[in-house]
Length: 201
Image 1 (cartoon, rainbow, N blue to C red):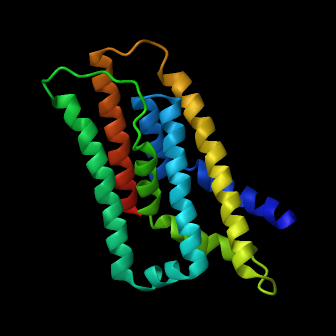
Image 2: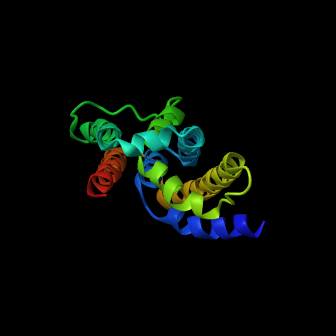
């Protein structure tokens, strides 16, 4: 049990460090509401769950072993974030009257899933940190999956909590068309910043 506690204390600062996942979730909260951030969080967690399965199956090792494949995934992730950012920024400069819709989109989970899936840094976290907490004399696959599930559970709790806090800080007044443009512009900027983070790292 002490190993899992130590693992949790090790990855907690990483979870709180702003990166593509967190910036994507905060952009959804700012553009919609806390529920949108939570749905995006579910998508991100699902993406990391697939990362965990890939690591358990050894597929992640193959991806990391081939730099071209790894770089392809990285640039796909960058392109996806820029695509989402462009969609938001386009509405800022549009002369058409905005349709203010506060309902949460059904595809937020899917967007969150691809944001995490196309972030190869997630795989590197598993390779750099997880092995340090695995007892090689026991079942390494089961240990790895337990640690992965702990990591994902922590992400879920932290990002959902941030969604609630950020929603309270940013949504204190009614949304009109002018404010919606500012929100879309800021949200698009956050996603562009997330893409820049991937390019620089």
